[in-house]
Length: 176
Image (tube, rainbow, N blue to C red; front, side):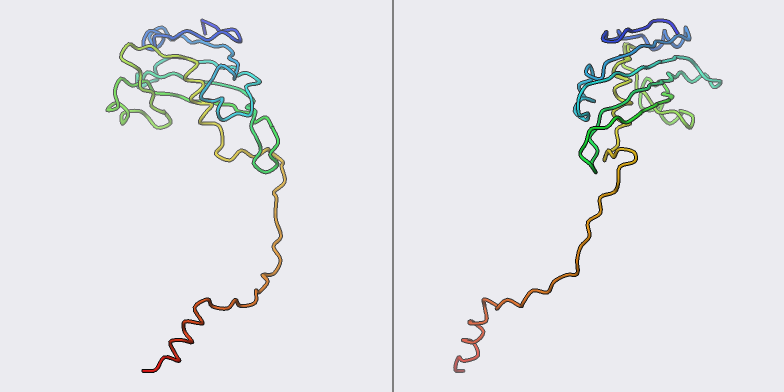
């Protein structure tokens, strides 16, 4: 691994194809508060994510970046409505493609990553994308108890008078 990023400083864009040919990587730490799209899913921006990106080619000469990230995401438990930290550990291999037609050629286990024409990738955006995917649709704190509501037997209501009963009576009493 080469270039690093200290907490608070956003990593600069990297040339994906140069990183692959040099078998290089980047690693660092980013505050969660620096990720606006992820921030909309979190209770607050407290905390940070440690990440590492390693660029390389596999035995089939497929260019990829392996992303590793660790964070504790502050979420609201949908059972207790209390804040909790969801531990997230991501290891994802992204196959680098130049156009969507190349996606079908990726080996199993690779997620496609469409690289812009200029080849520049923003490590912070890659990390943020993967963290967004790691947030559950319904966050529930581990160990929180299921809230169950007991419903009593259905009470039968007294039948209501039909508001059209008077019309029915007029219809019956109408001379033919």
